[in-house]
Length: 176
Image (cartoon, rainbow, N blue to C red; front, side, top):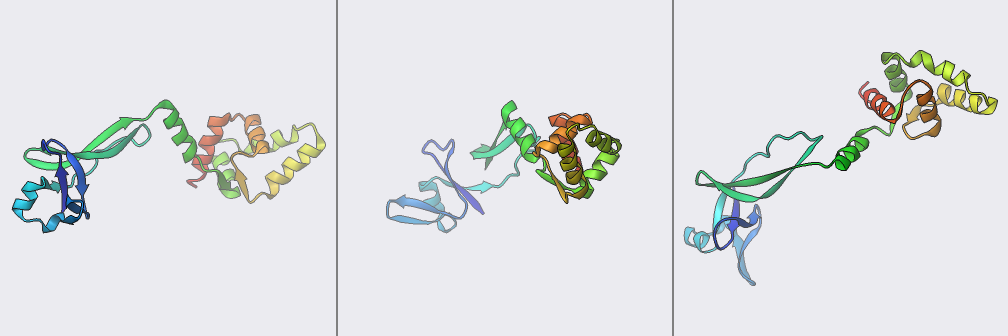
């Protein structure tokens, strides 16, 4: 059982007393569950009905518990739903992109997206022989591909992927 200790006007909770104690004064306290009915009334402690948080779109909203409220004679958790800002949504999107995928995942994702056959011609089109050789070794011998690697970003651009496209392919690859 959970409890709330209400403010003096009994309109909101001072605290949610899940497993904690109710303070009588600076030196006396006890668990809310041990209060007598008279003590509970004196200290404004009420049983709290635990409610599930409301459904939200986690990509665009956040939800936090915000005290409690009385609904139909019962004290329940109160929830606050807030829209994420464009910056928060973008930060969340970026944080959800895998930083690395395996060679198999990358190659399968490119194949399924119709881009795998474009990689070798893109490598062959690198004019500097040393850079072309380094890229060929990276493509042939890497065990994993890192999202932020400049050479990968360059090859990605050569086969038609901008930054969002690479994010999408990495996210998709991680599911394979």
